[in-house]
Image 1 (spheres, rainbow, N blue to C red):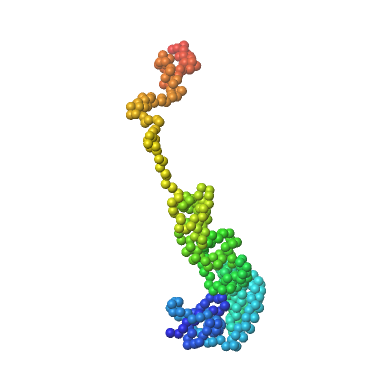
Image 2 (tube, rainbow, N blue to C red; image 1 turned 90 degrees about the vertical axis):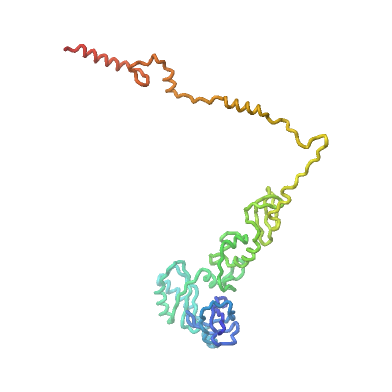
Length: 360
């Protein structure tokens, strides 16, 4: 089986696997010619890939070793990359392309293809017209390749908040996943300006010591929990992960407790010393007020049962009708006991008189 070699196309670029195909005596740092999706490229040998790390996929073959002429051609085309990037930006401005930033242009070592890297916040961007115009202007095959915000920061380079060169440009070959949980575990302030990098994402350095913090945090309670300590029960105010201690607030006093002392209460409830009573006194205290006897309790129950229940107060209408004597109610009265008005009685009497006076 032919050995598999890991190649890089940039000093801090991603590593790809290629088949040596009978080429022997390759050492790290040697240059070889391979065929990729971006055309023929010059790759840098990073080392041999062990059999344990092979995924079983077929690898592309290495064509040949790079010659001094290939290296000279690569330098010449790299010098023209800046002009191709400027031409791309000018043409994009003429066409009115907005929302896209063109970052870098890369020629293949023989100039057969140029790849322009760009970044955009839009999901879909139609750059077919720009690609066609660039092919005419540069007279070579043009490919537009979109990159993410982390790759964009890697290409730009610069200094990080620590004052040194950015990790992505200096040595990172692959971006690992970073979560906000890593910052919480390391007790780092969650202020966006302190946990985000130049790319606007979480800093890659949060993942460097995450495994050590996760191992040291085992057995330590989280902040805000109630724990039992030799000083008493209290609430956790601070967790010092690497030191293996916690700061507990017990009755307004702060105590630093070690990992192995969490949950112990040997000083919380000290034993009560028994007092030595003299011979002429009884050890059991005598109660001054004796317990009530059984007859007294029965008397209380009887007195409670004899109490009459409270009567509900009567309404005004009910009390008025009930207090009215029966003699005042007339046979022709209303059901409520009200008297008929004298006017109605007089009217009735007048009508009756008229009927009596009328002839026949």
